[in-house]
Image (cartoon, rainbow, N blue to C red; front, side, top):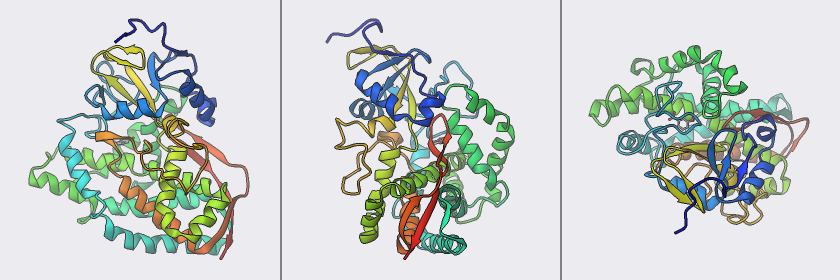
Length: 402
Ligand code: OVM
């Protein structure tokens, strides 16, 4: 095996992937990254980057080499104090990761959440009826993609009404905080104490309804599966990871349909495609664009020797559009099998809430497909910039009713 002992033969990029231009449209940068090589050194942040599907998937599969416990943002927890107590799931590795993960895997499992789908279907129909009664032009972000998760998910967790308005701003800051300390983080830092206190208050046992995910997490503490100190932090994970992600996943699928009318017609003909549609939108848009890992030992990847203790930036969105892995990757196509995308990650940290996300998406898509014949963009669309999320601020749409 020939290994490099310096970075000098590794492609180097001066581009800041967290800059305004890349956040506005990351696709050209990601194409350059994939073309440059399997591993690229990002000089601006002194990190390595992977943009090709094979390397991203392999690194996500190898948690022993590419650890999460030093943080999955740019900040290295070995040297820098995290902005909040680390997540017991996202920012942990086995063995500490195992008990919290096992509990959430069970609580959020596909069978466990099936009954929620029935009551969510009623919520979805009521939301869509009320919206369409007001008119056939609306904002698909605020009126649907944000409105539906905020209507069903906080109730499913069992948090109080007070403070729900802080869920999206807190998540927005948490996802910004994985990036460099740029102006997006500075803006969020102004409110971080207030938002963190509000979220923490919603994780306490005595404020949670008796039947929600939150109460089930506390019940696991009663059984001794986790400690009482761990329980509120695991509830915090649901509140951090469960709102902005699904909002932008729904926005992604609605945007994809509004710009691909043939695919909307296809969904209308075959509503069973709603789950495929959501996963295809998660592949296509990758609402979570990137996560970092940290090397636990020197490792050679594609001819580059990555030293121990370095941060690796993994471009999930780029892997999901790698033409070596996907035919016609830039097409939103309900005819493909999108399973195997890395938009929910891969390996032991793969999104534990993905069944909830799919249930929310298929429920709202089914309600929309019953009533809406066509959906099109009716005004200027606006991206929302975030260091980690590919997000929308506004998607004005016009619909034609059945
Ligand atoms: C967490 C978490 C998990 C996934 C994503 C995420 C902010 C957070 O456990 O807090 O993003």
